[in-house]
Image 1 (cartoon, rainbow, N blue to C red):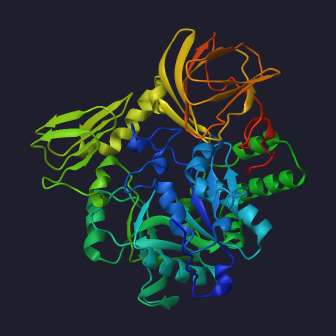
Image 2: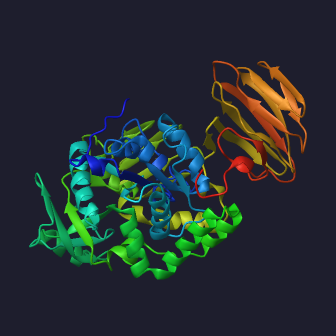
Image 3: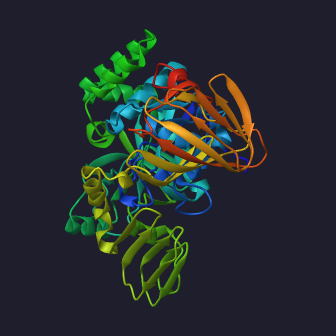
Amino acid sequence: MASLTRRTSNPELHNHLYPVIMAGGSGTRFWPLSRQLFPKQLLRIMGDETLIQQSMRRVVCASAPNRVMISTNPAQAESIRVQLSEWKDALSDNFVLEPEGRNTAPAIALVALELVRRDPNAIMLVVPADHIVKGQRDFDAAVSLASNLAAQGLLVTFGIKPIRPETGYGYIKPNRKTVLAKQGKLKGHPVARFIEKPNATKAAQYLKAGDYYWNSGMFVWRAATILEEICRHQSPLYRGIEKIGQLMQQNASRSVIDEAYRTLPSVSIDTGVMEKSTKAAVVPVTFRWSDVGSWGSLDEVATKDKAGNVVVGRVVDIDSQRSIIYGDQRVVATIGLTDMVVVDTPDATLVCPKSRAQDVKKMVELLKQQGAPEHLEHVTVHRPWGSYTVLEEGPGYKVKRVTVNPGGRLSLQMHHKRSEHWVVITGTARVTRGDEVFDLQVGHSTGIPVETRHRLENPGHETLHIIEVQNGPYLGEDDIVRFQDDYGRGAEAPRSFKV
């Protein structure tokens, strides 16, 4: 579907608007559907597009696709590139990677540093990758008004009118007596007060008062202004970012820059800058919004059956009420549930009361402490060239089903610890093995010895499926040396935070 660009009311501001999609989340609250390497933003929670695809389509209505910046980490960049392939040419030089998560202020400062280099008048529209927004025209109008305020040197956040006494969000109280700008029904006000996540009693009071707003986590400001405010209120962070900028200008090695970033203080942009700044402003918005922060929050946005259930996938139910039931591949049968969450995936199943959905994060932490792979990724892992599914593994062996898209190819690579044996199930496989290049048809197979350069590609017009059997003392995905790669990974990755 072609993207429609709606300009801000000021064409000059439109030319300097750079949407920044914050896409480094861990996705712990939507486990087992989300994983550390496949977080919530990559899920199709509502509609045919994933949350990050929806976010991208939303922001390109306010700016050109080649001005959208993606802030993420190396582990997730590959999956995001796959999902945003519709815009791959526009985004080719617009990924800014954190080597390690240091909270939102360092991530935003890093993007601001890059944008000031590109455009001293850059205005950043900062949006999380995993939120749901309904009402594109209202969103565009809010961005337009906020951009005008940002051009005046203000730090603007969008305020969401509360619909319940929520204890999981921060709140904003605007100074209603002062109108900084007005556009249609929208008004911008100075922030009178930021309130940290309240208890249930306070949240109920804020809802009843009607003059408090949820902090949406969406911001608009000039890149130069946010760097000035970080310098003013978080000077250690600013000095660290300034040092990183100097290292990048000096063409320092990636490892040196990464180490400098890891020493930055972990600071939230909300508590570290917005709550301290005298330049904070809020635009109360009219679009519908949800951060879909847990399985329970699907009640706000998903379609329900007559009994109030949210049902997705292969589900057979009798007499359940107000429950969330998700089936992936297997049939999920439920009887008489009330206010429950049931989520079934090929390798993990979650069952909990809807009221305890926020505790899923604690469950993921337990799995992580136990070293369970189920917290990290799914049995099926998507790559730019296709996917692989782990069918079985044990001491010294692993069996995968590998799919390669038409025209796709893996990197030219080598493994130090394992050999591989490939059997073609459907399609044609073109194999590079050492100095040999040959094609395999259905039913044919070949072996790849340890420490042998090799590559698998699909020269045909149908998807290639192979079965891969790995043998060796270590079978981790990090046992890989890349010599050539079409997707900017490994040896060909540039020595900076951009990829």
